[in-house]
Structures are given as structure tokens and as C-alpha cells.
Length: 188
Image 1 (cartoon, rainbow, N blue to C red):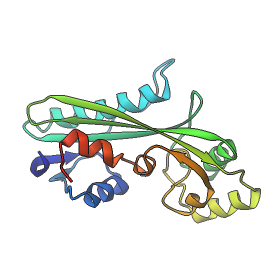
Image 2: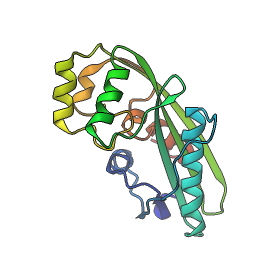
Image 3: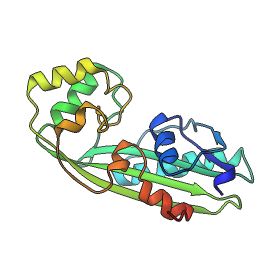
């Protein structure tokens, strides 16, 4: 499967994570889908649905190829945090996450060469320390928050704000390596 695997994501972090475990996709084809949550859809359901829809869209156009798709949703309770595009969005996320626990849901979908679908959800609980206004300002100046779910990148400066983590670290970066190894049947 790994010789003809398509990564249905434009995320450089996901590609780096796959390379870390020796998987190099044959192609990278980002799936452009509507990521708007459905009415009353829980964050964990959203992450899994989006991963499946991305995989299905790319698989339809690439028959006979295996497709791996993923989606990351950061949630505080039932509230889905945005992929921060503006400094105001990032500030709002950081202020909400400050001193609190939140969930990072990683939906993963794999469609094999025969069209069979496997899907998994990784749930990582992350607790931020109480952030000072100076820490928030410094983080915003770094620009690391741009395009990141929840307005932060754990693998960067925000790693120093993490008081506790329960679950997969790589899930918070963008893709649970454990789950990928299981889904693709990779032996370490």
C-alpha cells in the first residue's frame, strides 16, 4: 500500500510525520471540501467525518490508489476552535485555552486500493498553563499560530505552555503515528 499511497493533505507537518516513520507518499493531493460543522455535530464527529470525506473525494479521482486523509479539530468542550487566520482569532484561542484543558481530535481515514475504508479517531487531552498577557503577545508576534487549529503549534514555542498532555503528541502536531502504523499494518 505504501508504494502507491496518496496523502490527501497539504500539511507539511503531516508529510514530515509520515517521513519520520519511513512512509513517503507517492503523491500529495489536498482534498478541497467544505469543512463547516453540521448542526449539533460534536467536535470528535467533525474530525472523523472530515477525514473520511477528504479520503473519499481523492479516492474517487484516483482509482486503484490508496489514500490517507486526516483532519485535526481542537475543542474546548463542544466549542470547535478555528484554524487561526488572523491575530484576533489566535488571541481569542489562546485566551480561551489559558489555564484550561482541551481536546485535540485527530480523524484519520485510509481507503485502500480496493476501496475499503478504515477510520480511527485519536483523542489527546492538552492542558495549557495560565498564560500571561506578555506570553500571549510574544506568541502572537512569533506568527507560529497562522493556519493552526486552536491557534497554536505544540512543536514550536507553544510547547513551553503545555502543563500536561494525555494521549498522542504526534496527534497534536497533525497525525497520530501510532494509529497510522496500525491502520497501514506497518511493522516497526
